[in-house]
Picture 1 (cartoon, rainbow, N blue to C red):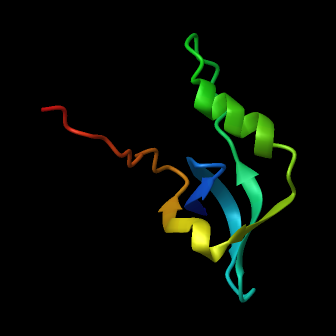
Picture 2: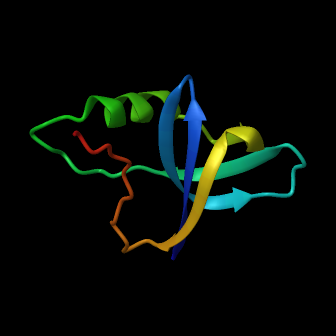
Length: 90
């Protein structure tokens, strides 16, 4: 199954959401449906992922403005790789 990873800015935060359905036909928005969240129970809780889950898990559809979207990836559902930004300390 094909999944879509959408990277965007929301409230000055970089957000990555994974969805089963993506619609780019609207002139100003990216429509994301059928969001996918990992069901892994970890001992250590990542507060940013928990915040994203609490905010978006009950949404049936999100309309995200094109201006806030930085990257859309099409991936297989078995692909667990993540791209993360980092800085090099001098």
